[in-house]
Every structure is written in C-alpha cells, then in structure tokens.
Length: 229
Image (tube, rainbow, N blue to C red; front, top):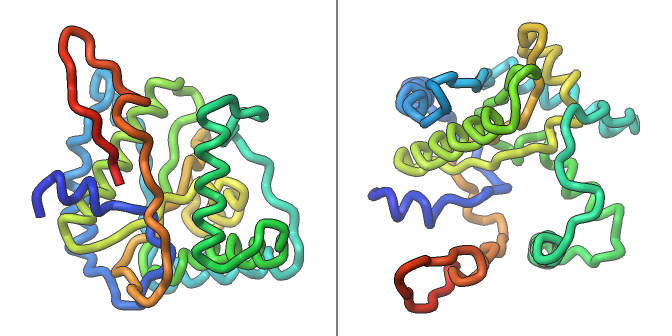
C-alpha cells in the first residue's frame, strides 16, 4: 500500500472484528511512528496500549458507568469552541447528519443517539486500543505535534491492513482510563484510539471533504478544481 492509498483509505472505523492484532505489528507501527515530526524533537506524546484482559476491564468499567448514569468526568481541554463559526459549524452538522443517517437514527431520537455513542466505550468491538496523553505544561504547538504523531500511527496501521478510530470521547471517562493505565502525574488524556480489523458488515457513509479551493490558496500559480471524497 503506497502512502496515497493509506491516506485516502484511512477513516474512523466504528465496527471491528474480534480478530486479535499481533503484538509485533503494534510494536512495529509504534516504533516507526516515533519518527513523526515534533518541534525541537520534544516527542510530547505518552502512549499506553491496551489489549486482552486490561482492555476488557476498561470496557467493562466504562460501560458500567454508562449503565448507572454516572456523570462524565470534567474535560481537561475544550473539544470545540462553544460557538463554532462558519464554515466549521456547517461541516460539523453535516457530519452528524451523515453519521446518524447511515445508522437510520432520526435527528430527534436522542435515546438512539446515546446508544450509538455508548459504543465508544466498547471501542466499537476492537481488540486493541491506545490512549495518548500529553504533559499539561506543554502548549498548542506540542498538541499539534501529538496530532501529527497520531496521524502517523493511523497511516502505518493502514499499511498493515488495519483500521482505527481516534476518539476524543474518552476524555470524559479519563478517570476510568487512569484506573487501568496508571499514567504519571501531570499528564492530560487527549484521546483514545480503537485499533483492529474492520467488520465490513457494519454500515457507514464516507464523510466527504471540502473542495481544494475552499481550504487551500495557491500563491503564484493556478490549479484545476478538484473534490476529495
């Protein structure tokens, strides 16, 4: 698989088989991902990988919290600004329509939406997951570095025939994650990531992308119009 195919085939998969992910594959991916760029080579990511009994324990504890109506943990960072301006507001709304529309869930069916969201805490059935932390004393440039690292991980997983789903949603169950992984003091949980082989029986709609001329400006040349899928 070349890099273009890895980029265009990567997506947030929300349905995995229970086929185990070989540990040597995870080690190979994460060893290579360490070469992701970071300012002054700070390498600000702290990653914990869960499989087997520890992951099962985390899923069980998280789903128990859902079942008992336990309130979410207070977020340690803002996922989205309180009032998204255009065009970001429209893109987020379009994603929600496409996501729940593919599942046959009506916009006003909050119970069904909550059931669907609860699948996050089962990692969508994935047999492996990673949880990425960052030191709370670091700033926005280092958070950007973590994003580049995670993208590198996801592309390398595609090269191995695997899929993933990055999940900021785990930030609201950060205390449950901490019970299992015991992170050092001073770290913030940025996100989880479900990892495994795709369950192709699960329906999905591929989320489109904005046309190139909406997000990119070429200065000193011209480019033909194109649309990414």
